[in-house]
Length: 317
Ligand code: ASP
Image (cartoon, rainbow, N blue to C red; front, side):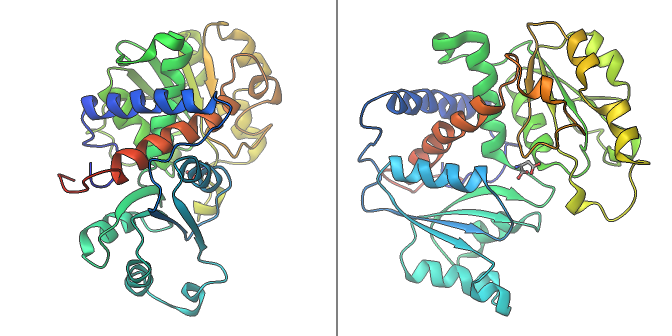
């Protein structure tokens, strides 16, 4: 694997390999010394043009556990705020010898541009581009689901027949897009539930069904309910009357949570708007995987960095 840009087109064998390597990396986290020498001498740059807490920290921890040198670069306070282009930034990173670039960017497609540009020869990992994709989030979600279902016996398994309901702001969500492609590719049965205004205009090519009634979806007792954050920063219009109305119809509130079977797991990629898309009772319950998702994120990102940067970097995209 040369770059990790999307989950659309990631074949299920490669996805399962990534998840299995992440299991090996999770074992490292349980050791007394949580560090591997694998990427010693390699430089990983975290290039963040958009805010992030979990993803940036997680990539930093992952690279450090693999003994890579890590450079954190955020657009704020850099020459990007003086108008430096992505090309000039990339050429600067090439000049300092970056082997891997983890990029988050508000423009959909920016990581692909970097990968195709020839400005830099590093392995590129998409850490979230606009409303397009966030592949490592989907991989950590798949990893979390697989572990909840199979525990230590997860290795080699796909998600055949697992029912997953993704709820909320699908329109603006790169997490939803990456999950739809990945989870369906691994055999899961994916349903999207959202207000009609927050569903993309054309989902006919998506391997998922679209529904509008959250109560009906909860009553089917899906194995997984994944709540999405309302992406207020990407909303340049009015998509629902007000937040009370939204949480009454589309939120996983206490009543809906109580109706979910205790076998259903509740996920959220963070950051959560408690009381809007998810109640504290649901978020802090035994069924919630919110904190596991963060912990698993480090293992999954270690796996991605390892597969991209260790050894011979020639190969297919
Ligand atoms: N942290 C995720 C992302 O960057 C989800 C979110 O922000 O709602 O896409």
